[in-house]
Length: 84
Image (cartoon, rainbow, N blue to C red; front, side, top):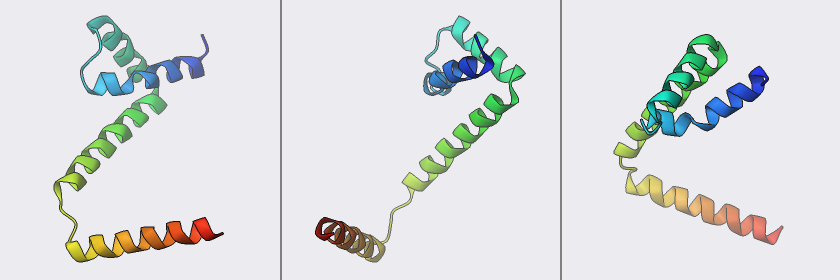
């Protein structure tokens, strides 16, 4: 199996890994791969950081005035695209 194929297989398991849903043997093999593969280790760190940023962003409430402007912008953009 090529390194690229191994990396793709590992990354396909990433969500289950981060959520703690993998069997112990699969988790151990994945962690071994991450330890030996810096690009995958970097991707894992980025994935975890992104999830953390998203959780923090979801904790905040958008001000009503900003929400109204955003909705108007999206509505206008969709209308303009449908006319094109």
